[in-house]
Length: 428
Image (tube, rainbow, N blue to C red):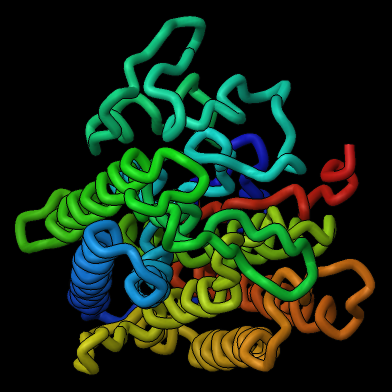
């Protein structure tokens, strides 16, 4: 998910912190380099796991379009859900790493105007003042208009999706690639609002012999192209964190204090502005299921949990891979503990508390109350569970600020969110 730049505001005033009085130990530079190396190793591992699961997803999607059935659709959906687990844990590497943030919109941009891609329910509407391609339905139309020009959409290739359709017309909501475009094509719209139920697309939308909703062959072409593209995009980012990768080098070749600033910028921005604000508080304020992250599949509770887990992974310098093995090493936690043990203990306790609140949201979902139901208007208990997780994220961000001060990192700014910083503006 690319954060919407119009809705993000830096809160540098709250994070340009006064340097703490603690002195770093004599071997601090060596320790800092080791921490940065662990950080890069975890990034490499989590993107490699994301790549591995995307390849499985790609295989299952090709199996679906080759032999459409309820079973092959179910298997493709399960592969998508599995692929989200490592990827969401990677989001702690976004903010502060320009290579990652510039790339991220290709794979996880949201929310999207799904009418760009395929058929939608009548309640979706027919036009938008902000997006001329709101209901372009490229699957049904081999020619579309972009910025007043006719564009050949007869072949829905990976190159067309990424080079022409993605953010067409310079509109961020025109998301044509990545996890959420695939999610929509596997589940379809969730038409249940804040009631029980996710998207209900039938496998017959891909059955050329018994096609429902028309254009089954083009829909299959779009879906397989999007799946192939996801694999190639993740190959690129996994390589970026490899031994000679640009993302790894940008962290390890910089001054250690610069590298530590990158780490904490990522943790604080994800914790506060992105997760607590844009992904959770905004949807809760509006009671709007369109603001939930995995809105077609009702998988939002798991995505939020894995985002929080990704923050904890990076701080503790430990990541459990999908094969059960562990990548771990020198940690940010150990650096903070060396200069102020109380800050480290406080932050670790708050990370645990956040994960416990997220687990409570997940437990409600597993018991039959999906995330979009939890944020629904009038659901007092569900709203309170989500708000508790938001409060925990905000609280842990305060301790991340204290860690910034303890390490004497002078210019770290966490991204903000109107829903947290200026809630009155959300309703204007």
